[in-house]
Length: 253
Image 1 (cartoon, rainbow, N blue to C red):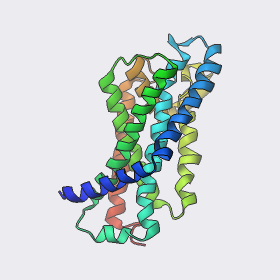
Image 2 (cartoon, rainbow, N blue to C red):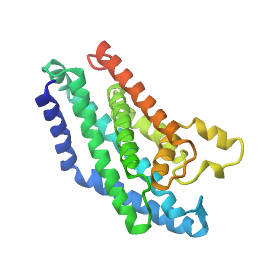
Image 3 (cartoon, rainbow, N blue to C red):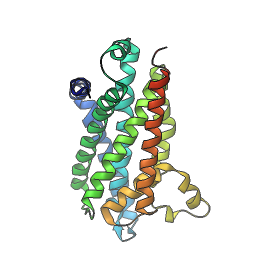
């Protein structure tokens, strides 16, 4: 294992994060604060509780998931797309760094950024609402797994994209709508038939549900199912990344 190669890629990506600190940190915090003001205060004042939890506290896990999913995709996809766009990807491919080490460096940096932002959003939420965390270890586990899985997904998007427009296509047109419809602001038990059943087809629901269970012990689906779905999604992304490096798809052409 070339630890120096992993360290070089990881530190390069983390330095890029520090150079764009306002965009990388201030923007997500500001957006989440606005969500708390609009949904937590304006709408929450008209909703008593959901499953015994105040509405403002209920949406905290969903908002964190919404933010870290978006940040994981954006950081990871841009991180690998930039070398492709600049043509420096060939230097990386010819360097004594394996595919595994390349993925660890890029995905590890993207996941680290997202975890840090998730923790910052968690601290910001305390300004607006009181919340408890019943299972803190599971909270950390779900957060790290989600950031890692979607950083892998973003890595795939970055390799697939052949323009900056395509780079934003899947995050904006697919993932963000799924995150909004994945129980971020509500419980699917509030939906009428057949929409509560249809909602179960949304993979993001399982991430939000599992993360919310780690906070309050309540969930729309069983925590074990949420954890399994997260692992399956991550394994599928790993398999696709392995196939990309094996075939050179979109990397060598």
